[in-house]
Image 1: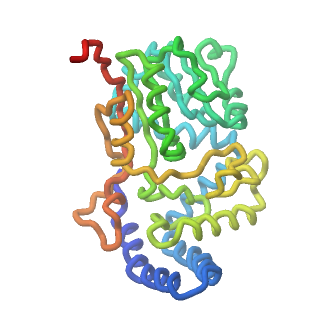
Image 2: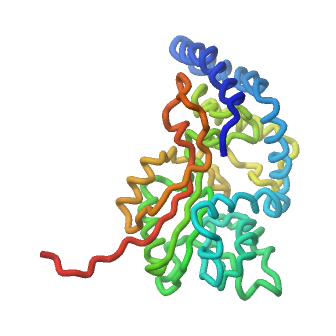
Image 3: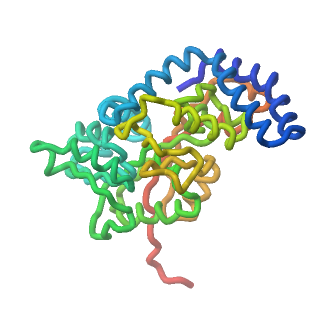
Length: 326
């Protein structure tokens, strides 16, 4: 996916014109006044992105109804897997685990490729309750959903494929190697893990797009100020109900207030993740970039990570060395 050069140009204009002001006021103004200034500037910067706002407003409308989200938007995006490995190779008559399956929309898409067995697991009781509505008389022998930590899956449960879609950016960094080692424990030697997630420096990697339409807002504003504004907009949103994607009580940036919605960010970069993979029992066979801008230069004030984008990671279990140690 290539970014629109017009969009990036608008971001550059804002960076060059506003970034010095935001940084200066942070240095000279009291914290509470600087936060008020930032929360006033965020909606103004959004005016530069009205086409994106229209598109993201549609997504926000879908997220007011978690079942509607499950049956529409959540079923999109598996083509990112298929650019790395043929879906028949991944799924046809294979035993598949969806790690962090959410409300189960992508499992329905995987089901089209006739897996032998497909299990979705998630730490959210609410997500699994919605996902379990997808099992019926026809698919219940193949498809199942469980509210379960991956560490509780027995080693006797062997899988050909583990998939994980937009989960790893939310796992604490110090737990990732353990999760990957569980993949190794559960995968057959010939198995694969396919991992897709948005890095923090990606266009909407800040995960604030429901109420902040500015791409890369984390380059212009402090994350704390962005979360403060986003949480304020959520509390003001009269359309939020217990059946919405974000629970009424949810707050961005507050780990103890997630209320069964695990959305905190670990700011994992590509290099961070590759290093963690090397420290695990998995090996990265290939990465496929799917959100890198096609510009011949790096704009000023943009970290290079913004132009790495995000990736599909194809992993496999490391081969065990059973030879004698000299």
